[in-house]
View (cartoon, rainbow, N blue to C red):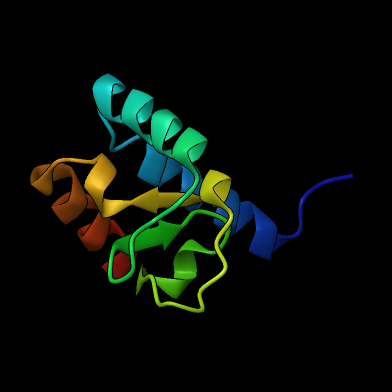
Length: 88
């Protein structure tokens, strides 16, 4: 079974975002997944729904840490690339 066009687009976008990270940043994201908690107000990208753009953690936000890319896990330069990619 092939992914739907919507799912295929999401996969491509997720891969495009992950490909912007350095090897060190990929490792840092993996460690952040293990920690499992983002701070209130922290910016992140939901890798399961990258079309939602940059989001901020709110007190009531329920987030699966395995599906997000927190801004704190990447450099300012990489975050700027992510923002530009999502703006397309």
